[in-house]
Image 1 (cartoon, helix red, strand yellow):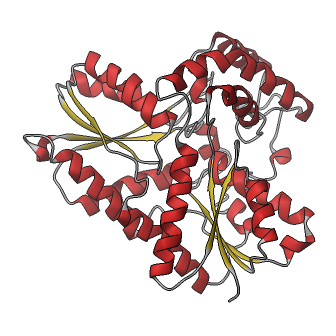
Image 2 (image 1 turned 180 degrees about the vertical axis):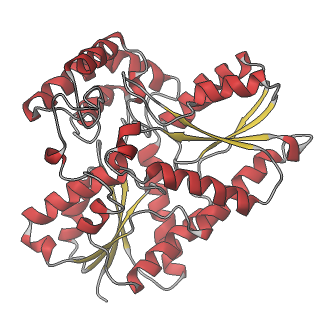
Length: 387
């Protein structure tokens, strides 16, 4: 089989406060995050947003220690995965490729090329596929492959999503059970799944399978948990003058409080590592909303991080991928496409029946409204999930 490598993909995050501005610029420069009708406008707008939001974003990072732990945790996951694969008889080099901060995907590709890897498994650390997460990384990798003849000779395979994997479901169920058992009446605690949101147009117009995969994943986790607890699924981190997937986390928390729910366990379903959206948004912002709504017993399930069952699941995914026929980046980028997903340039612009939709088809009024919101700073830190 030759030298085997595993490329772990994630968004990345600022390691320290000085990195916040450049990180935000990289994030908003991605057309999968902000879709504009004119490419030349992408970087000026990214600079404008990042410069306006850096200070506020830094204040949020200060609340969780002055930087994101995402790189440290992802590298620890890689080390644990390497050991687990070794225990299963599969030697492999592990590479971490972040989309918007160091170590960048390009850095990881350069290293694995230098190491003469002959067989590569590309594993995004997003259980569910979305245009704005796995899809963005896959498009970048496609571009790198097209530009480098040496990469074109590399035998590789992609794992596009893995939310159904039994090991992952079992790890989530164990983590949830641990939190439930901290309550006097575990079976009566309400389980609250909070997933990062995406604009509704991604699902309805671009054919993003994200919502369907999140909903199915929630059902599978509850089935694996096999407890009678009631549960709710909601979506966090919306922003801008456009409808995002609903219900929104803050609204759902208020509704549960109004129903008299007092015991709540929050499950960050779309995240496998602690970062700003779990440590700051859920643990601080949403906890405050819950308490103000009358939910006084608020606990949060930790992200899988390096949980042994989770790492074993990742190792099983890699070994299975090596045994199966190769799944290519072009297939991953187009998976489950119903309408127009890629390339972005084929999306329609101008005055159409849905011209007010920001992501995908933009009208000037929507654009102006978004700019106003970005300048005021309302909610911008979480332009997408996984910051």
